[in-house]
Length: 296
Image (tube, rainbow, N blue to C red; front, side):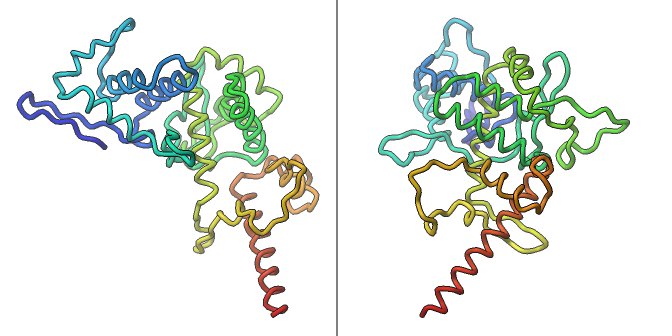
């Protein structure tokens, strides 16, 4: 957290350094600005000024931001530059990318007439088929920048609550009804009334989770496993024919019969499949290592 303090005025404010430190309201507001900057509706300088207002819990005018209001907190340029900490340098020179190192869902519940619930923290309540379908919408938006795919991504995960007498703890069990891909289009249309900060904010959460997954170290039965081996293609033969990623993996697992037919694989918890894929990948790498040692 950044600290903005003016002792003479008895003013002290704490400002998030990145999206992962934002509360739910700050997160939605910042994601709204990030989407507008992405789609050229506002400049980066405007994003910084609006962002400071939101993060300091101030309400800017709908027509114009009165920058003089911010001057009581000190140097305006220095305040606006605090927003720079939300970004880091990308692979290309002078490329600005959003810092994404969070996997907790700040938008767990939304309301459109009734409540809809999304993934729990770390996507613990997600089924494999749900995730695979979401990847398609995610990649489609990344490739086209068409907002329809943002709504489809959101609609893949957000559903009504199960009808039960007592609600289970929201971060350990799934309170949502069963995923039905045939409802996705219908829900996507319904969610178009939501603030784009919510919709784009979930896209950024999903992107952050994907990034985490490629380097994650998790514990299974007391043992640490490194999931990065699932995304290391250095030992594989490249092909000119494009693959279909996790969807291909889903078909392969279904063919193996480990979790049953395709529909059963789709309904298997996401993390259960990931651990199984890790086990298969590790055995493959161990076998190759043994073969190399025999050749020496």
